Image 1 (cartoon, rainbow over the protein chains, first blue to last red):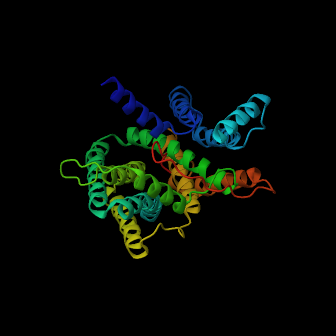
Image 2 (spheres, each protein chain N blue to C red):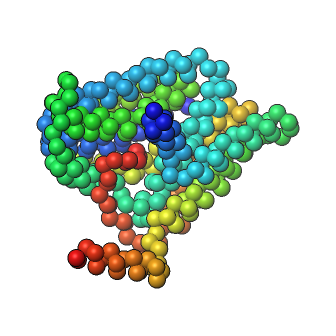
Image 3 (cartoon, rainbow over the protein chains, first blue to last red):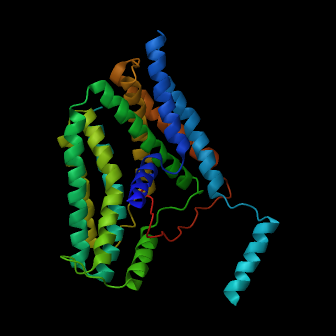
Length: 90
Length: 258
């Protein structure tokens, strides 16, 4: 039961939040800020979401791009690669 | 939003996910047999129809401001995710979605799997493969179609766009009997990402209490604005020496839609 519940929650988390939690959090914060500014001030608040897109989209892209790019091998990863190649050859 | 934009957004989103689901169903059908694969498709369509049937009327009774806040947030989240992936693919930093590779991976996995019979299902693997393909690829666009339609108080038009897209992809799949490799998936996802993000910004802000300068005509600035930002980011990320990343085989389990 617990496993199924965990799988259910995980599915919906991955479905809505996706690859980068920053997007969902950024959108939620921006909507909340728009509501708060609308209720507490008289300034126009339409600019909050466009500004959020201008901040969140490049930031998320940068985070995802840095995950996509191959990392330069460190000594540790090189050693692991050698070990795994040797194991495959065995 | 005009009816044309609603139709286009839902049609493109459904078509692009339909193409991806088609590759999975074709793999199940050609390698394991069509009876169980088609049973899986039918079961998946029934589940998606149930989601739409429950969610559509439920959204329709919400107050417009609440609906727009919810819909705007959801569309903006989905739209930014679609846009991020489309930009990374266009910039050559992420593998292009390769239907042939998906098809080959699924066929290899299907051929290796054992035949298990269940009540009413001759081949459980083919059934679940098709079912998961349809449900996982279809759930996001079903939500997009319902929320866009509910927000415009025009769910029938959104449903018509979705059904048209599914019909077009199905006919193309039956005629070609192979993954639809000529469909410009990344371009379509780019456009859908721009539209979802733009409408998410517009409705989310309205739902949160904002008033757009020029009201509906603000969309005529938001959509090109988002498109320009996306194109500029693509140009910035695209390195001169970068070549498109070759598509890697897609794992059968835990496949992320879109």
